Every structure is written in C-alpha cells, then in structure tokens.
Image 1 (spheres, rainbow, N blue to C red):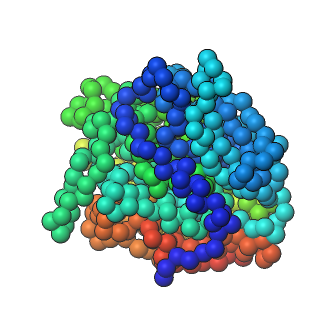
Image 2: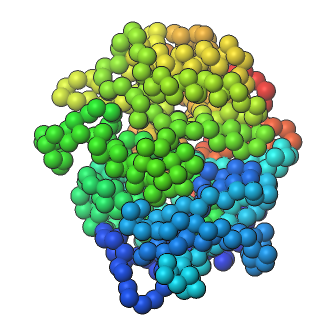
Image 3: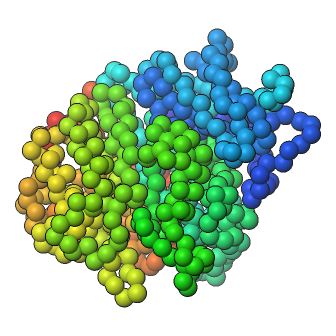
Length: 526
C-alpha cells in the first residue's frame, strides 16, 4: 500500500527542504578549510535531539571556527524570535556544537534557525539553516507518534544517488513522527565504502565515496569521518531538519561484535594488539560530537543509557547493551551478574521502570532478546546478543533478562514494549510464559526493524527460554541483500491520546505497511 498521511509539518517542508539541500561538503576527509574571506557555513545541516515537553538540543557543524547562535520562534517568519548564545565551534570538537534550549512551550511546533558568526566579528554571520521540532505534550489527548530503525551504511552499501540515496528517511518523514529512535549502528566504522559493488543482475551499485570510508576507523579523525559520510546524504539532512532524534549505539560504532576488554589485530585490518576499549573512547567522542544527546553533552565519558520522558503517554528507556557487557562466549554460565547490561545499568532500569507513571514504557534495546545472534571465533560457538539457542532454563546473559522480567511482573509494571534492530530484517515476537522454560514473567511483545541502508539477512533462529512466538517476519533468503533490492525497514509506533492504544506498524523502505498490531493500555502483560 502506498504511504499517504497528512502531516502536521507539511506546510514546513518546502522551506526545510531548501535549507537541508545545501551544497554537499567537498572535504569530508579533512578538517574544514580556513578561508581568509567569506562567512561560516553550515553545509552539514542541523539536527535536534532528546526533545522533551520544555527542552531540546540543537546541533550544527561549521566549516571553520564560529560562534553558534540559535533563534527559536512559534512561526516560520521568526517574528518575536528568542535568541540562544551557543558555544564556540573549533577544532577540538571537529567544529561541531550543541546548544540546549529550555523553557519551551509544551506540545508546540518550534521553529529554529542556526546562525554561525565569525568569532572576531559577530556581525559577520553565515546563511541561517532552519529546522523544526514539536515538543512533547503534557496533555494526553495529543497522542504520540514515532519511528524507529537502525543500521546505516553497512556491508559496503553506502549512499547510492541513483536510487535516491538514503531514501528510507523520506518515507519516515512522511509518517510525520514526533521523533526518530535510532537503535544503533549509526555508522559502520569497521567497513569500507567502495565505489561500486556488483549486484545479482550484473549491474553495479554505485556509492558516493569519501577518503574516510576507504579504510576501517582507528583514529579519532577516522571515526569523525564516518559520521560525516552519512551527512553527505540529502535525504538524511532533510529528515534531520524535520524530525528530532533519540540515538543509541551498538557494535559497529566501534567494530563488529566488540565487547569491553577485547584485543584484536592479528590477521585483521587493524594494527596488532589493538585495544577496542581505546577505540571505543575515540568513537564515543565522535559520537558525542555528531549527535545531540542529553547525557553526553559533549563529554566523551558521558553515559548513553537514559530515560526519555515524552509526556503522560510515553517513557522511552534507552539502553546501552554494549559498554557494560561481559565478553562474548558460549554464554552457558549458571551465574552472570554482569550480563549484557552490567549490574549498575540493570538496577537503574528496574528503578526507573518502577518510578514511571507513563501509560507506555518502551524499552529501546540495541539487541534482541530471543533471537540467536552468533559470534563464532576460531571454531568456538560464541554468542553476541542475549540468547544462545538453548531453549531451557536461563543461562548466561539470559539470567539478567530473567531478573528484569521477574521485576516487571512482581512490581505490576504495565505497558512495557521492547523495540530493537540489529539483525537486518523485520519481525514481531510475542513472549509468553505458557510457552517458556522460564515462567516467572508477564507476556510482552518485541518488535524488530531495520536496516535503514545496509545489507539485509535471513531471519535469525529463535531461542525458546522466554517462549517467543514469531507472528510476523520479512527477511530475504540470501545474505547481504543490497538496499537496491529492497528489504530495508522501519517501524512506527502510534499512541492514541483518547484510548491510550498503542499501534505498531512495521513498514518497508517506501512506507508500505507490512504488519500491524494494536496493544491495549493498562495491562501487565498481553
């Protein structure tokens, strides 16, 4: 079915498209040129993040040292604009910066524009770049709608302008979401983007290329270049100017299947003895520079997991299943206090879920619970996610998830829904203790979407420990199917303000609805 939804922001799109479609930056692999004349430019567009009922973060990147200035208004004309003095942008942050806006009206469309001023002459400003977002409403009846997905520019499938570039972002914008939840793998730091890749029909997939994507990322500048690569895409920049984001990370921000303490190098494209903890620090810094995230706010040591309050209808619990995990292994241990979340994050999640008064509590996981994700190493049957294929009592990382699910049941926490990406196909799983080896939990749903623009893969096997029933799946039968061949997905969550019902729609890259499920509010499990 074709996508045809009237949007609250439809009147804005003409001006936003013009501001987002600035000339493509030409020096992605190097620092901005320091011209002796001219004014600062913001060719990488703007984006907003972690928007609440009264606040939000606005991001920009300059082509040279500049002072960031943000103006906000209730109208596109910027009449009676409010001005926010932002940071000085320089080489220390790769010329990126974020400004926090506060005291905003709830449930209102906020128009903003970013000006970049010459640090030595504030009167010299570049062309303003505009964006918009809608603050969360404190009134339940306005409802909430958002989209989610993950995995961008993976397996060497980059920006292909002949198919519309990252065209899925245009389809997501048409849904008119309040925000976009990216479930990780925002970049593929461990993969290169070649000029062409062969397709099954003998034609070529042609990528936009950049020096930063000609090799795996090791240095801080390498990681920065990976984030800049994605911003070469016009559809993504248009989307960023219209839809605020909530961002989490996963493995490919550093390296495939990485875990703390891992050392690599022999027989790989990385230098011998490469400590992934060191690479993770560099990646986290670049991540904090290229996304507006409230818990990081430009600090490389900032935490990524957080709870995002979006009015009375919705709390989003953004997990970090990468930073605090134990090593990938056969995952069959009978005790596992560290697990995939770490003890501190688990206690935080239990505490915040218990405190939440939102009708719906979305648990944004960067990895699925009951889908088996192998990580074979030198013949060992290691596992990357939670499940390890043993359908019996919880083992390994499943023990931590069992503790969490038990907590949700015994505290009578209603309205929990799990959303994830990672596995490069889309599916819906219902978990029920009547089918499970572990029975001390309430039924719940897990919905999977993605990739945004990466190779698509066959459906993962299920692990029966928590009793999953896969009621829908769409996945290719071959591995690494290109974005030109389809199998790119995003999900939509729509919460009705009157009934409180939550409807999930799993969609294809063009917006076609593949699967719909409506859940009722106020239930511990369903």
